[in-house]
Amino acid sequence: MGRASARPLTRREKVERKEKALLSAARALFLERGYDGVRTADLAKRVQISEGSIYSYFKNKSELMQGVVVDFWREIAEGAHAAIAAGDPPMEQLHDLAVYHLATVIDNFDFLDLTFSLRRAGEDIIVSRDDVRTYTSVFDEIMNRAIDRGDLASGTVIWLVRDTFYGTLEYSARTILGRSTKSSTDMNLVVDNLLEQIRRMYGANAQSQVNSQSPNEAITQRLERIAETFEVTIEQFKRQNS
Amino acid sequence: MGRASARPLTRREKVERKEKALLSAARALFLERGYDGVRTADLAKRVQISEGSIYSYFKNKSELMQGVVVDFWREIAEGAHAAIAAGDPPMEQLHDLAVYHLATVIDNFDFLDLTFSLRRAGEDIIVSRDDVRTYTSVFDEIMNRAIDRGDLASGTVIWLVRDTFYGTLEYSARTILGRSTKSSTDMNLVVDNLLEQIRRMYGANAQSQVNSQSPNEAITQRLERIAETFEVTIEQFKRQNS
DNA sequence: CAATAAAAATGAGTTATACTCAATTTTTGG
DNA sequence: CCAAAAATTGAGTATAACTCATTTTTATTG
Image (cartoon, rainbow over all chains, first blue to last red; front, side, top):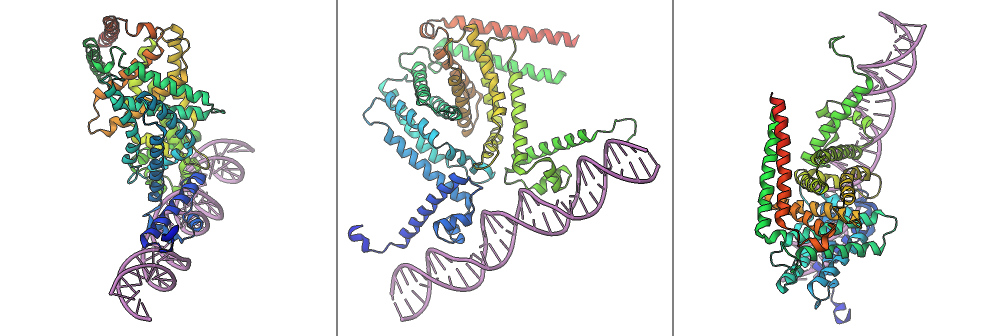
């Protein structure tokens, strides 16, 4: 407030304020009733605007939903940054990030599920990869620091670790939610396990990593590829001969 | 046509045949145009029935979609069973399952995406957990055998490993698909990495032996297994071609 | 085979709802 | 205060899922 309170809001500010109100109400409604359960008429009534106005803010219902989702991701990205203590060693930050992510996914599971409603119309949409990337970049930064410091092996392939990290946490969230009691013991178990796994697999003092390509490892991989080639070929022959 | 030649189908058989045709056409259409992109009228026309008839087979559009999804999961569950060689040691089977799952997820990503769109909040639906469970039970069986045999530590918590397994594979599928070229090198990398991770984390002698087991030994073992596969297959061919 | 009942199929009509647009109100700058 | 631009309105339209009275097909029985 203060002095500026006298100044009338600019047109732009008014529009933005209304857009925010709309997004906020939409988020609550979508969460409560699901995408299809929300009638644009109801939404309009709740925000005290006309139905038609919605369409001067968003092209259509699914773009509105998209706006809601983008906001959500922005928020949890901020949360992720806040969750890790700046001075901590990377592996501790990774731990904190894991705890934050697991908790967030569990707490917002209904909402994340909703996210998928967006993928229904074949065409447009899809939660912008950029928003997700902003989020996962927190992880990448920590990893890079860990590698620079020598906590993790220099040959570590970050995207492999990233997929394990987020993949494991999200699947575990589902499992934990599926139980009657979502115990924090389970959550700790998941996180500790995941971190230990990463340490054993990529820790600087863990020997012979798959990606560090000791000669024997390279040979093994080559062997696997050869085997696969033959196996596939044999399959083809089988099909042809039957 | 011919009275005697073909036994006339029973009513039940006819209905089932039509239901199958409907499901099959629906699957193709949903995949091609997305859930919202499919008009029940079009679908009816393609299957050569009236629009109303659809609703004597399925309560509504989303139940039809659900039927399609259930069918799909049943198919890939069969595929998973078929993908693992019965006599192989558990860790080999786990490897094969991983390869199968990753390939399946990548090949059917559009469809799986559609699957998730079913999770509309509010009312009914949701892909029956049972169908997914039938699928993941393949994994559980392998794990149990691995633990029984002593390949994995007896204290291994299966659900933790399961979540890492499927979580990692599905996230990696996304990453791999996101690239312009979905290389099989990447796929092998993901699978090998995942398996190695499980071995290091849960291998019966993980602590002591991970780093001490001679790589050459492992390679030799693998080589033996490959040789056996070929010998068996070649025997089969000989028998078939004589 | 005809008569009859049961089952299945039909498609015109109903309903629900996202979205449009001509008309109206509000805001802004001169 | 005026006029142009911007924003808002809500009645009306379009679309597509779904219903249901009627018709057609199939099985059954004497």
